[in-house]
Image 1 (tube, rainbow, N blue to C red):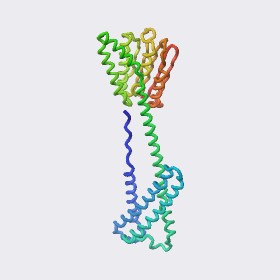
Image 2 (image 1 turned 30 degrees about the vertical axis):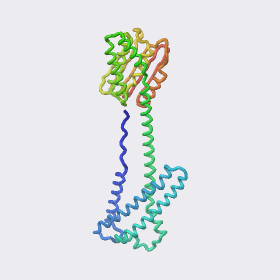
Image 3 (image 1 turned 90 degrees about the vertical axis):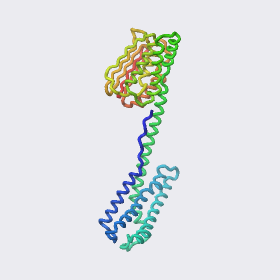
Image 4 (image 1 turned 135 degrees about the vertical axis):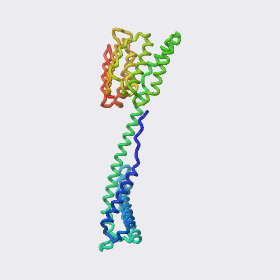
Length: 352
């Protein structure tokens, strides 16, 4: 089961709140210290003027996002030229919209003339004044676009990495060695063929293990008690396969109280010991010891090796475990594997 993606909140409510606050600020400023001849009682006039100039500010902010920043950040070929053209178009549109609002809306409809005291008003002056007055908002828009694109790229990279990691973990879990289960099926078949009284219990135990592998093992984490129950089931079936001659010293020290662990993380080591180890020698028993605290797990497994080895854990098994540990417990584990001609030792420390 993959973790749910964090919900991505829409941006528009934030923009709406910011522009609403700016509108209130502009209206209050104009009303408290007017620089033009509008009656104090014409509150609606101040609101409409503030809304109109807010529209100009918003255009100065958002037009560069699409016309200037987008070609630079996401375009291909002639990006600088397209961005420069977008900047010229932005400034031209701002100047034109400002002229239309002030001379065709504000002046005839609201009685507001922003240039009644300006004796030097000319077309070049108006263009220069518009560019200078709104260029700050143009820069704010470009800065917003750059930051937004950077955050978006980082989020996409994180999501891609998470998807890759999830897919890799799913693949690694699918590689859990089925060798032990195949051997167990053969042992159960022999019991059924012999009509042994232990056959029904063995089938039930195998069903429990398969249920765990098919359901619980697909979670990102499981209770450590469930994982150890699975190990106990493996051991019980192995005793069955060795006709109760398995020599194993298994100890769990510490309190099991809700600790979590990645599923099937310890299983490959135990299966490897059963596959390659000496199983029935009282002089060389397999030793499996787990020391558990509220936040740590120390796993120690030692087994003598059979004289004839078909293969080694160093194939899929050990590489699989190392990779899963790197993905699931980065900077939170220490794994030491000592593989000698006579024995195999595994020491694993986990910060749970």
